[in-house]
Image 1: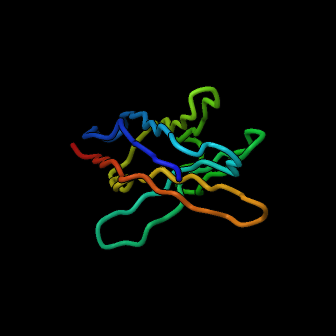
Image 2: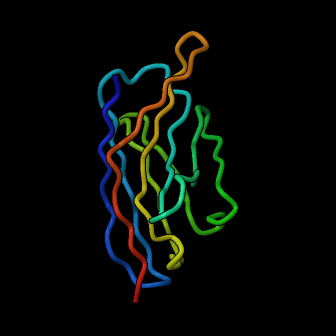
Image 3: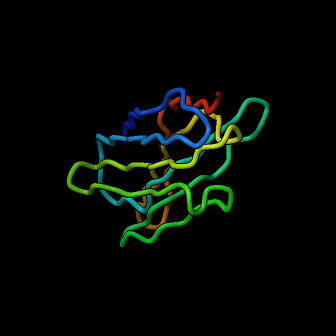
Length: 119
């Protein structure tokens, strides 16, 4: 099993920045990728960013150029630096880890952290 604990959410004004942190513990082997998703009120959960083994990164078009995902392998931690925040970035942000165990993918989720962008 993998346990994920997010932190760093909060209230920020438009144009501001926040840095989310996700610390993973437990069976930290065979990690395929680590990433972030978000869910706004009344909407489905959507992909934000991921970082794969080898540090390849993918971003949703809505956050490209504003958000940066990174990871600290030594501490099993993934970060999401969010700059130039907009009200439409308001959502609960979830950390996601995917393990690849002999070709079978296992998804793990954190409890979520609230990000509110408002003046």
